[in-house]
Image 1 (cartoon, rainbow, N blue to C red):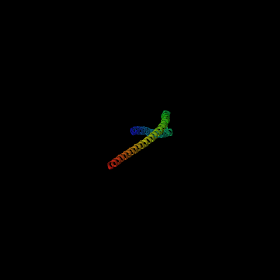
Image 2 (cartoon, helix red, strand yellow; image 1 turned 60 degrees about the horizontal axis):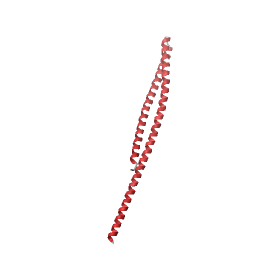
Image 3 (cartoon, rainbow, N blue to C red; image 1 turned 120 degrees about the vertical axis):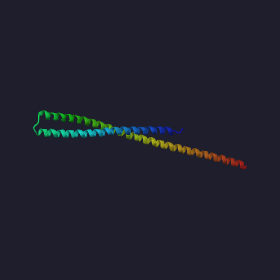
Image 4 (cartoon, one colour; image 1 turned 90 degrees about the horizontal axis):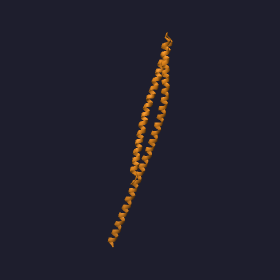
Length: 150
């Protein structure tokens, strides 16, 4: 047994690990992009309702109306701070997923190198065996000819 099938199984396993890590990274990247989009929308809403509050305060208004805008702005700011914390967690998950993918890819490259080396070693062993067999055949033929000529 030359061991090559074992290396090929390990290479397949390493390739599968890379695909899984890439999938996880893609999923986290999607969550990251969605979080960025949510942050933008929240920022836009905060600006919009702050502008509305300012415009209401510049004209005659009821206290309830201004109070409702203030409450909504406070709620948006609360959501924004939660969103920021969520985004930070997603960033950490993204960094970790990228690190895992890089490690899996390094492992895959290492195993593929070992597969290549094992194949080269096996090929070299086959060539040496063929060479020895050819030498043995040549010696047998030489000895037969020498006996026939006597």
